[in-house]
Image 1 (cartoon, each protein chain N blue to C red):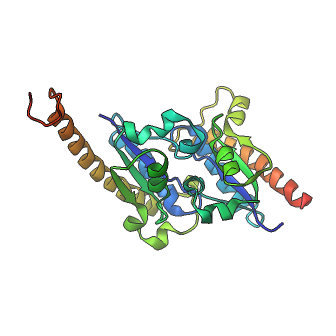
Image 2: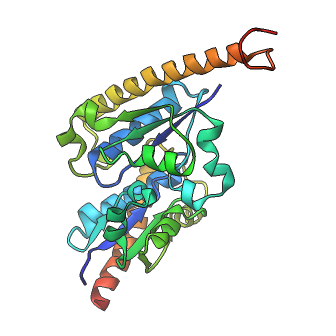
Image 3: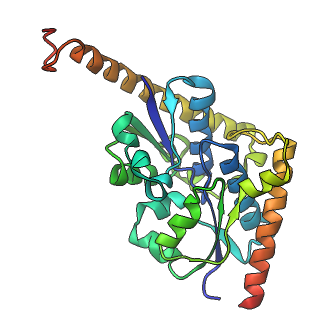
Length: 133
Length: 150
């Protein structure tokens, strides 16, 4: 594997979904799989800069989107990343109907539990990709 | 009158976290009624409506580092920004480009950085608000737009 696996969150500004996606990605890259995965600024990918493209082109990507607009997955794919699997915070939310995760600024304990669950799923995908080589 | 604040939210460095939180402070506390935002990646992943953001609202970009992704992406896909805030200029380049930070690990020092950046956004926001309101007044009731009041 020439490049680390790119874990790319949408970091959506308007909804708690974006913050959950962002925190899950940071947890995977800095705590759960620091040697195998890294984050990359989605905003940098959006600029379309050559350097940003080179960073992501041909790399295995695990986008984590907040909502069904799938900004992270779409932008990573447009930049030449290979989407191995897509994650959506909204799917975790559906499994926790009635939960109060917080807002786009700060998470509650319930919100952090959702981050942990999502991060665990992404971690499993990272480990699987590493095993596949 | 609403003004757009577009943050880079950079996931690679501390500046991105500070940029995001300062922008959220504008939305939640400082000017909740007057501030609007958009997810930056929607300029590409979204449609015509999203790309019209900077044409519909005077916009201030907030960037964590000197790559100016929020400013450049907004201007590339949507429209010219009215002003730009650079987090690295406020908290220092070294701090801004240090490792990414989870909001779980925010310290008092980080919160102070957020407040400083939010104050800078506020300053620019008020200047844009003033000039936009003045522009509105100038053109009000005047079809020719010259400000003569005819």
